[in-house]
Length: 303
Image 1 (tube, rainbow, N blue to C red):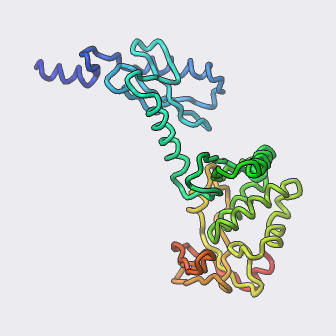
Image 2 (tube, one colour; image 1 turned 120 degrees about the horizontal axis):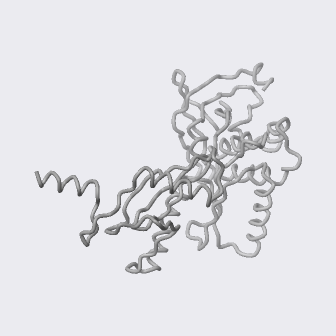
Image 3 (cartoon, rainbow, N blue to C red; image 1 turned 30 degrees about the horizontal axis):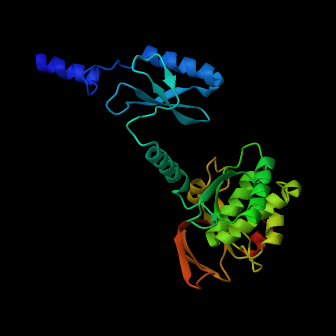
């Protein structure tokens, strides 16, 4: 009987290394914390903050709460053992601050640099800048211009680009879709479009975007129909989701020509795309894509 009771107490009331029980985080306490944070952060009711996870910090009764809400990234808060105080950071005097900072930086790098996003600069650069960009955003353009001026002053930095087209910008999603399709062929193709979109931001519209890109970048044939009209429309949804930090919009296809340097091996309704890699002249085979349609000349002339 007493063993069962002891097990119950251990499960419900965790103990520290010193044998003292930690206060449980009850539902009323969670409601109080969320109410306080909502007012402190100043978020509207629609944000709907909630505690996503709750865990004790090492062998203490401090709690690490991960708080999230609608359109808000999860953020950690630390709750004192008596559940009176909340703080954004908890400093451990037994840990070397230099090691702690290095580990924190490594954790950030793991999140930001784990996927194969397009980048400029050396992997060994002392400084890495990660840009979450929207090609239609004026402030993103200003940041792009600042980076260009920085490159003149110093070259020892790396720029990594991640797509974040905003819902309120009419042609931002199309621009990101074009850039992702271009990147499928070459990273240089992506950066050429990247620079073009920012340089011509003031004159680009939803109506002229595709024609302007087609006219200026005919060699980036991942999305330009070849003059003979044959093209495969393939499903690139997975790549868009991987590359874009925000919603991918309704753009799910790239046009791949079936002539010239790109060859498509069609097997039923699937295709493997093969093109010559410019750096070493070797052929590179893509993953298998779902073929949505094959466009003949008559149809492609109207697209």
